[in-house]
Length: 632
Ligand code: WT7
Image (cartoon, rainbow, N blue to C red; front, side, top):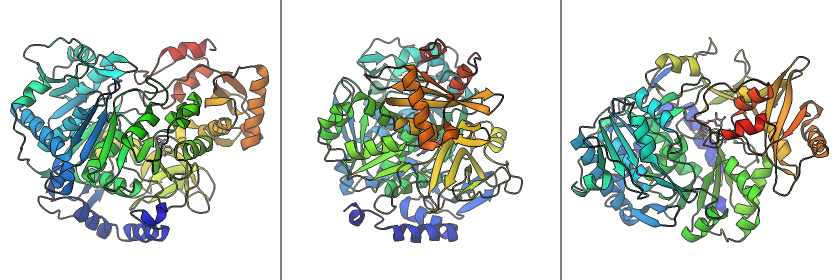
């Protein structure tokens, strides 16, 4: 049923378009850029590529915000919802495309008046509220470069990011709602602002109504500034390669990397992938649970979805507030049709219990997505059965902050699914799995995932650190200086499907055997007592690395030496004796980033008995470290 109705239609259609896209990439990308983007002046070249630097669609000029908003004005879409917002306290607000366009125009005037324009950096530190989308698009409209800092980051992290890119303006809010309490963003921002001399103005959105101090001459209220501003704004157009945003992401060192994305290529990647991967249509109400502070929020809440004229649902708060069924309540209340979330969230829902899901109908859903880490088969099956009611395809989408858009993914209705596999490359993408010498590894063998050709939405550099860009992402293989290094391990099966193992530094080598931490975790996930787990390597004289697993049990389960033994045997049964964990440690929490990724380097330090090293500013709950060290 899904197949007949989908945008692509069939697997043969995918193969046809994919083949064209890699046989004649310039022809393919030229057509896509002409069909999908609105140009003020057509581009002259499709690509200029001198590794590691790519320039796409040079000679062309366009305005990214116009491509997301103005194109819908005067069409039937203008009165359709662009954003349906639900705040954590339950307040609901809908903005049509016309209303969103007016707000963005007003803010664009405010930016003009503040002297913030082409190339200036603007930091955005907001809760998940419509104003975050407005702020991003207003920056795009005037050619300012936004850097969104996730509202869960500390004032220190905010300060470092502002200083790294020398932002002139900060857009923040009094506070936002999280688990029934106000997160005081403005006071966190104030702490940062004491050490950020580049910031001249602070625009403050009133959201939570908490008391804030307004610094005279620096801080101004968003709503007061907007009140006098006209709802029509004539936008300038910018070069295809004009920088659109910087987004900071963790690297292997403590200093976050400022990933730089530019305009036309990024927007095309986000738009085209949204159209095909989410099979978008006018009646969809799409919910991506990622915060706007992550790349997923940039590409698959704002740019990719709005350029397609989709209706997005935005939720401010925690998934388990006031009860663990909040998402399912909202799905029914707003008749949401697409849900895009992370495996870590899915495992949390599993842990909270099926009863919270079974209370709700969920009949509006037609497509599910997963992103951020490999999805273990148990979570996949649960997502498919309990949420999708056995009728919604799951798109397991592989990509990175750096790639800008989804690169390996099923296309719903076209690609036959295999639970746990991100399946096949998107149009124009040529990934390969290679060994340390750059030779393609055999079918079923683990290797390093590289992308052998440039693609429009790839990062262009790291802000102010082009040398680190070249070193981190290119040049590992002297004979192939043009290969982009993903940092992920993967393998390819007999059908050409990609199975992502995880970050290469998460791959263990035990007695000469390579074992992905995700494989072990997925095996543990099939045991009825296990809610979540993390596998790490501990230096071992005999085996190179010993396998230690941290296990969080489901509610109602009790730890015991017997259970530990059972779990070791279980993994050995699932994967093979080589993967039998040397030790099972029961824990009550795992160190995670605020985006939900397990911070294995911290666990590695803990099992090695070392003091925890490196940056912990991205960590959700630092007290977990002490608990783990104490054996809790
Ligand atoms: C890393 C990128 C892409 C937006 C969210 C994360 C892992 C991402 C998958 C997937 C297996 C995945 C990779 C990648 N990853 N999606 N579908 N299957 N692994 O963005 O923080 O830049 O992280 O997330 O390891 O390298 P990010």
